[in-house]
Image 1 (cartoon, one colour):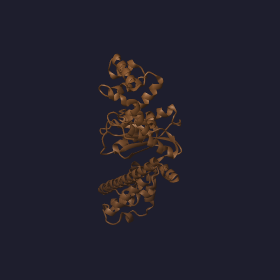
Image 2: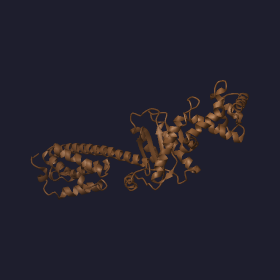
Image 3: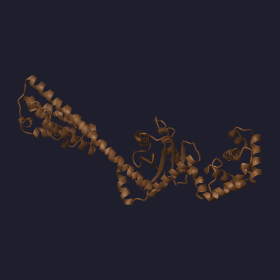
Image 4: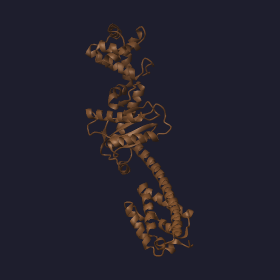
Length: 405
């Protein structure tokens, strides 16, 4: 091969422009500009056998970054470069005029070296840009989620920031929180798993998956039913069960507990749903509720009871403190009351739940009536006893002393 620049040796550059445009069409309209000086490099290699310089390959890597930033897929970018190489090879003036097989072989080897180096460098640049974009998007997503859950940010600014993530802040949303049993060393796998299954079921609009304070956070669209409508409860349970089923497949973090806030409309509804989910998770831990999925609507009664803690402490003291005088203390009788209320006031069902005889159950109920002065079978007394029993559970009494009021 003769030395010199292939750019000059190939004569008129119009044919290179045609090759670039045809390669762009082959790749589905990928911008021609992403080829940069790739075609002259190939032509130069075919004529002179010159390998690309480091600066020339770095320029190709930069083009790979530009492709990623413009949203061109990696496959399309590689297709552009391979198609350009194929079309250039078919139209190289050197080959069209040459009948020397050794010249053709040497040119092919030189061109393939350039293709190999260029495509590898293009892919590396593309991958580096994608990693940067993912990190940037993750930071923006985390900041957006923090502001949405806080609920006190500028509405106009949030609407603009939410738009690239496909969020319509005028819709009804609900927030679910997933708590692992142990701190996860890496949450990427959990986020990816949740995104895959939730996007598949709900679509990728109006859904955000992120982390906050060691919890996985899912912001998802909800049915347009009011928060107190039965459909709202069903939607919350479905989202929670979907999340729990997927997270339970992960090798780390089990057992998971998921809490789901009620659906609410608008920006401030997101913050409200988050607070409900967080409170439900905290309450479930406090009450030792071991259900996989806890809905905020399931724990509303505890929120009401604990909102006025001094009154609740007074109720537990006045109604249930006498049970401490029973042989064995208050705990067996409190368990009896809880089972009795859970079974709808049916003593035989409560006895089965506690694995005791009906006679034992009846004796305990009589003992409760004698000690407290409240009859569990009387509708008026039952309400007082049940409220006090729920309050005792929320206050962890008698395992812990009642708070001083």
